[in-house]
Length: 395
Image 1 (cartoon, rainbow, N blue to C red):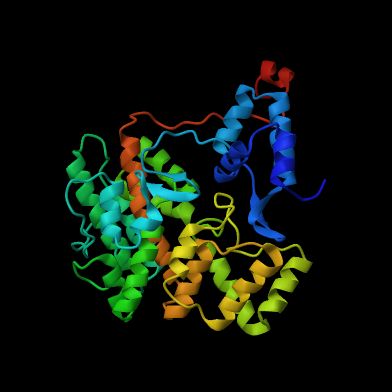
Image 2 (tube, rainbow, N blue to C red; image 1 turned 45 degrees about the vertical axis):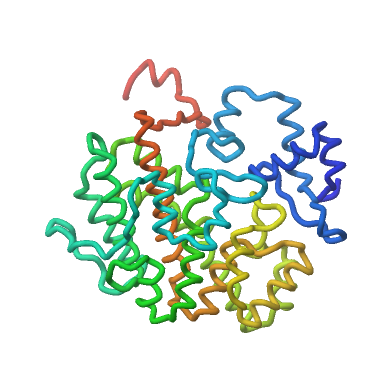
């Protein structure tokens, strides 16, 4: 069987209609890519089709369902925060890409947090004396160390009114922005970032759009980590720290760091050489393609439409599209924005972390209403104990 197959073949093997194949692809069960012979059509990974076929044939017992739930085949936690409709992300039913055309991160937070009043991510008050001082230089060390100090002395979320928790959420996002280099003040956070990084209002507008596009993305691994922490009654700083720790991985929120390394290779060797090397050695091209968006990441398209990437990066994206059919996702768009605006080296992660802190806190707040600790069960697959030793006890 070929590595990639057509819609007709996928429907035949799975014995389903095209709508079901589209649903599998949008939920990440089935990887898709544009057909190089006809960009209006998609091809589907044969290995994924084979796996889905086997699962249909063998049925799904309880253990298989639990494993699938944990590893992404089935969403398992009800949420009213965000979802994907017609290949586009939505926040509480509103198209996130359309929202990013005019909204600020503060307005996205008001929507995701279901708040009655306007949100302000101002520079917070000085830390209490019980919290260790954060690192002097802006960046992720300052952000993580500051949150860790707050988590160590933070109050449990239990028994506290929603308006009090919302006030703390605003303070946490404002503090995180400060840690990544935003200028002090009460302006919207995209303006504070532009001032802190000494960039003009035109750049601030691009930052605004990026922040809104990154605010949430359904039940990601970082959102799940934040929800697990919230389910225990831990403090909001602890919930946010747990989520950001998961976000910091190179396969999640720090993926733009891998893209920036790829851009560095492009500057040294040229676009064609880099693409040829990766394809010849079977290496993934970081930041291209997305399992949820087989027809292209609409967040990336919206952000890239606001500026012209540097020439070498633009040629690279065109070459990747020509040879693979894969389109840039939000990680490429974010790294290209950093290069275009000459932002600090860690600005991509700073923007991602600050924006997604809104979503992580939204998931934490939503989880509080469940009132039950998230406690998955382990399925032991290790060596069995020696029955004779168990009977005899320690020697």
